[in-house]
Amino acid sequence: LFPFFELLRLSGRKDMGLLVSSVWNMPAHDIISMVVPFFHDIFRLFQDYWMRQSWLDNYYICVLVVMFAAVAVLLNRQKKVRVIFDLGLIGLAISLGKDLSVYPLLYKFLPGYKYIRYTIRFYFIPTFSACLLAGFGFDYCMKNIKSESFRKKAFVILLFSTAASVGYLL
Picture (spheres, rainbow, N blue to C red):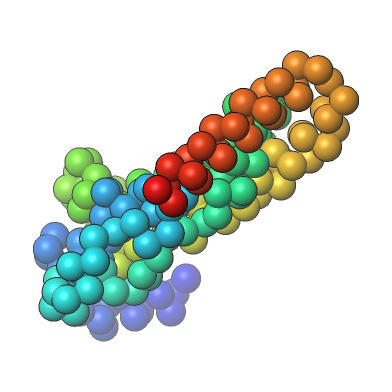
């Protein structure tokens, strides 16, 4: 911890303003890219390097991972599933950076938050949370596969994801 404080004392991050620290966040309109690969606008590729977020180009997780994560969040009532989901939401909020309406308040009042540049780097938290939740969701599916009510719910989820996939292809 002491080397970090020394680095902070010697680096230019201590004098960063709000505009500099909010460069390269995950655009809020790209949240859909977690399920649909490369959904973001193609024109951004022709913008200046510093005007667009260039650290992470694709936010795609996988439809199957999102589907099993949804099963875990909606059907699995374990407390650890809720904690992992909440941590994923916090990580997503941090990675949204300036697109989050409370970003200026966090920047001003949350200790250490103003030293964070490139908030897109925190996108690994919701990605990792989604993978963990997918594991819990898959485990839930395997334990409840013989239940008739579960099979009905699984059929609805499968039908919805198939319709979404076909709709994307059209």
